[in-house]
Amino acid sequence: MNAQTDNSPSSALDAMSGFDIADPTKIERLEGKVSATEWQIRKNLAATYRLCAMHGWTDLVFTHISARLPDEDGQHRFLINPYGVMFDEMTASALVKIDGEGKVCQETPYFINPAGFTIHSAVHNARADAGCVIHVHTPYGMAVSAQKKGLRRYTQMSMQVYNDLAYHDYEGIALELEERDRIVANLGSKSLLMLRNHGTLTLGPSCGTAFLRMYFLENACKAQIFAQSVGSEDALIEEPAEMGDRVYAQGAAAFVPGMGDNLVWPGLMRKLARNNPGHEH
Image 1 (cartoon, helix red, strand yellow):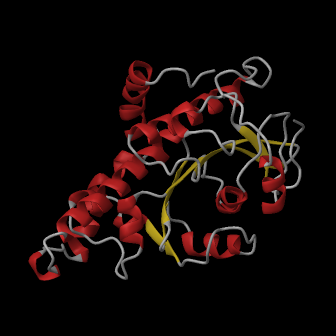
Image 2 (cartoon, helix red, strand yellow):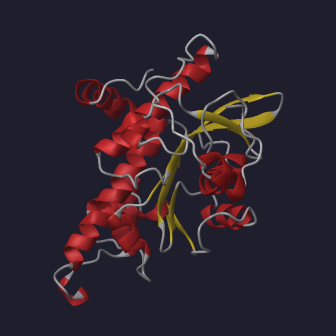
């Protein structure tokens, strides 16, 4: 299948018609056929997909993680998942390279999800520090995204990300490119985004940092839903903004590049090698 140039919903439907999604562990290995830098980013991104699956942050094939590649000829390019490949079977070679306009920039047997392009291109095109963008639909993240007050300062984990969290109102399935400007405006300079009635999003300069932010955000949402199960908000202790500011400052080092990611990422790679090897194909 030649590289996809039309990323419209109708084009995706045409591509899916009568098409068998290739087994990502059986396609041609791209190591040595792309730059060493791109290959390393591909391996890290494929690992991130499998780690998200390991933590239960998947919605079959309907959410996305992307990683920015070095610019080529002044053009932004990034990697995203092939539509139809499960997170726990993702490989470095299966990932699809696209530009900021949604054009596929490689020969591939796959196509991409238009909604994934809309959200991820918005962030990558606007934020030079968005080396990796993770967007998921989990029950706990969606449950908190539907709450008028959003994430609350109920737990230490929530306070470690609270001041870096922005909100974007729901506009339907993200198929309209005009929504990108509003996503960028709502995100601003923050690194976590609650997509109301939809899900969660984090970014970071590396896959490790974006993953660590998602770990904190998703577990903060989970703890909030558990705490709220008592049935009365009056029974819960929400820390004041001053305490939230203090905890946010105390925990900030975890998200400094080379700190929390280097502490956690190597161990995650060892765990992945034990439990779900194969992402480096």
